[in-house]
Image (cartoon, rainbow, N blue to C red; front, side, top):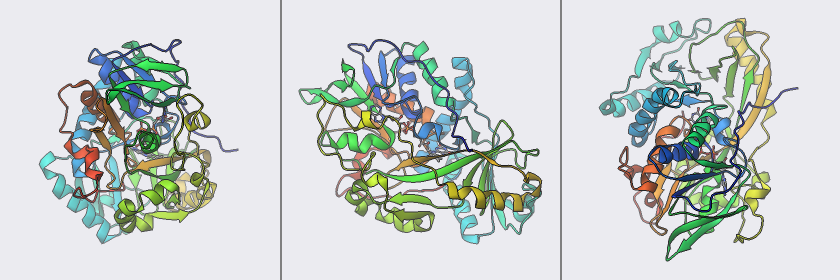
Length: 447
Ligand SMILES: Cc1cc2nc3c(=O)[nH]c(=O)nc-3n(C[C@H](O)[C@H](O)[C@H](O)COP(=O)(O)OP(=O)(O)OC[C@H]3O[C@@H](n4cnc5c(N)ncnc54)[C@H](O)[C@@H]3O)c2cc1C
């Protein structure tokens, strides 16, 4: 019997506050980091989660924290996040599982190698610590699996944090700073007075506030649409599994090869992401934003399989129309977005891994799960005030790489919501870039 992922539970507060400076909607990595940053700056904060802290994407990811191969627009914010991953454990007196074990990518494909080289060239102004490696070093870095690699790229200062405990640990620290945390507390909608935010309607009552950070992950676009605000967002299904502990560690840090992606885990097992493609299901949201996502789909069509599935009828990309704030909503009906994993990836992936590393023979899948990755058309998040609704800041659409950048992204969202000087220029993350007629930039999707 294969189990599912671990998740560290966090206690909620008993009583909903009547009024706070800032309400944060969603207690994934982004919402928790935003709540922590705003509370640290002296603001009163309520953090509201329809399910449990990190119940959705933030506990389902690989945990990679990387500057390597990121869209150039994200690099300054990611570098700030890496500094926070370093400093937060001492600041909060707790371990979030962050280790700078380095990333190694190897390949046999000249086009992939050229892509990494082009990224390094573009990233040069930010002084990345990543560097290209030749064929001989690629073989040295994959002992036991020395194939005819033509080279690769290594990023010795990137690393990994533990998704099962990073957001929960930071949420506990946020509570320590006075954040009022409420799980199983869906926000049904926003209250406005004179055209600006004046509160939120939750399933447990209303809270007055001056600002809201919407860190609702895959649900953000749907939530905004109810208030007449458009944000193109669509989700991709992805499965991952963790193995039983192995006798040998074949790589000190995460390793990407053409056949599989292996992440060593603290218990001696590995997290495995198969080379199988992510699944994109046909949904009302997908149809609505098809034109905007088409360039990304064309560029990455080999990486996704298109399907018709349940997400047409349920979940964040389904059609929900207008709902009332006085009655249970879809957010209460689906407390945790928990898609079924694709079990069929296990056997072929294990076969590939053992063929490459015979000394790993005998490892089994111990836990398997899946997540919906929320994406924007240019694979760069929206971290932005909403001009049409003063007091509202959106922080969503992290496009498969929001965990590592989470600490900095949450801080930036908190800065925008509280009027503090921004830690980095927020312009690249503006929602306005998706407005009709705005110039489009193709983003850098993938790992
Ligand atoms: C398989 C997989 C692998 C990944 N690997 C990596 C990786 O290695 N590195 C990396 O950086 N990123 C990775 N990611 C992406 C990363 O997990 C996400 O980008 C990140 O966790 C997004 O955080 P979030 O807080 O925006 O969203 P989430 O973690 O999804 O949190 C949003 C929360 O908002 C809540 N919510 C929504 N609507 C409401 C409402 N109305 N009221 C109350 N609560 C609400 C939801 O219940 C949810 O808990 C991966 C993702 C997946 C699925």
